[in-house]
Length: 208
Image (cartoon, rainbow, N blue to C red; front, side, top):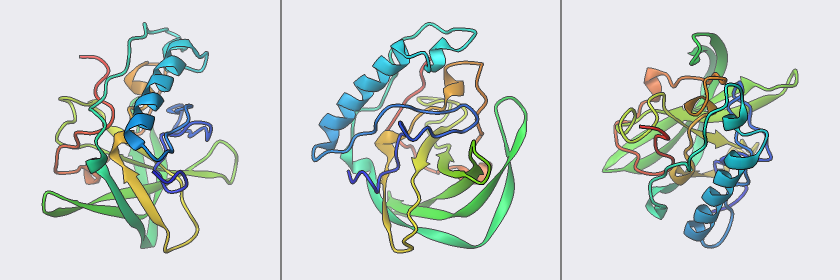
């Protein structure tokens, strides 16, 4: 995995989606399976012990290890950003019934099962006025079954080079903090963000 190209399961970047943040360093190594396994162990340790863990927010929730599909390099793709010629603002509903604005800046695509699929890249306001962060989120045929019923996320580190090739690593798909604690509110994927396939990679539903 190219550390600059990956869709990071953000940590240290303080990805802020209204409190839905991850603060563990994502895997960057020649052996992605070994690094992903180690990364997941580090994330469990962070969630178990850190004061910033969603499990420590009031009301506190008892921690148990997160659940994942097995690491699968077959779920790693490379794609360019296809910019939207007319970036538009859309309303995004969150898990507490509020709405926020996001700008659609384009899509990234990949091919699987003989079909081409795409994910929308959203730009949202950051914690500092004039700052932004980028993200992808989606539902798929596992949503509400093996995976969290709201959907899953991938973080996106945008490069200014229009020819830059991104790595889409679905092994890094994660649940937002609202999957663990009612203290958090997180954006809900739109119906346009549905993938008509089973993404059997990344994080599973934490609780049954």
